[in-house]
Length: 405
Image 1 (tube, helix red, strand yellow):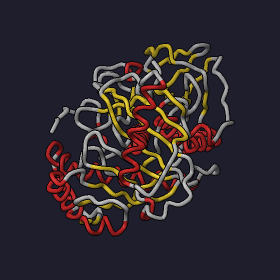
Image 2 (image 1 turned 135 degrees about the horizontal axis):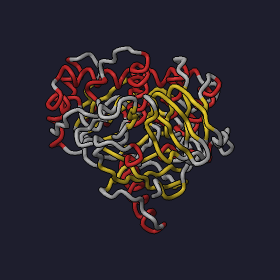
Image 3 (image 1 turned 90 degrees about the vertical axis):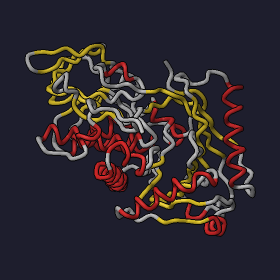
């Protein structure tokens, strides 16, 4: 089943990436990672940097799946607010989780800044605005909880928003410590760095089966086999490939557009990442070359649209929403696409070891913070392999009770 449809923007920015061989012989390693998208490559990079012998296999090419459709926002705030997580997890665990997400955003920035290949990484603040006046009380509650726990956010009233941006909304929270990047270039740059640090990468190498073998696992591929102590499923929005009984995801589709370069974005204060309280929500960001990326219009359908006419209708809706916020701009669409994405009922990703299958791990960053969650999963799995404690692991463990609030 295809994961996206339309004209993707990010692959056009790096048309000739490094390619990797097909696995055509038996090999062994301590860990094998299945999947070469954001989650898999972040995991491979993290293990390689920690000196753990690992292999990564990708059935297509690196970053060719959902990563190509990723819109590149790195935000520690979640689709589910801290105050909402406080109801389902308790405030202590909710704060611990949000702090871990903020740490992950900071760590991703350090990774991006340390790579040899530029990924257009830029530190940004986010403006999370009330879609309607009815949303203000919940937004205010969120701000107060963020402030009480030291996240350093700001409360903007209607006049302050209007003084800095060309639109008015009743209220907003401004958070700091977020960022944007080119996800396609970022994943390829990490893969190159990880390969230089010992990660073995194989493209066009599909996982056919995972079989127990004398306390280890044999991962059978199209033309080879990998024997490993640990198997890590970073299979993105194809959860059936991970097996097990814990992953009960909701797979939906979303839309995105990228505009042609715009002469001036001077009205866009500090190039904030913009998003709103409505669900589904609209979100926007800019790029280095003065394009606008806008996304949203989520629908509860797994398969992306398969007709240009249907895609164009949604793209025009996104463009109309953009123009409502920035009426002085006249952007034209350069690229447009529809893509599958996954969510969990409790708003948390599935990260860590499957208790039914020791040595088999999930790195499934489902939700609006997929890149953030990918790093959390990579660090949780790394710590498990190194015998270290990770305090967030119990919150996002695959076997957690799912509490919906």
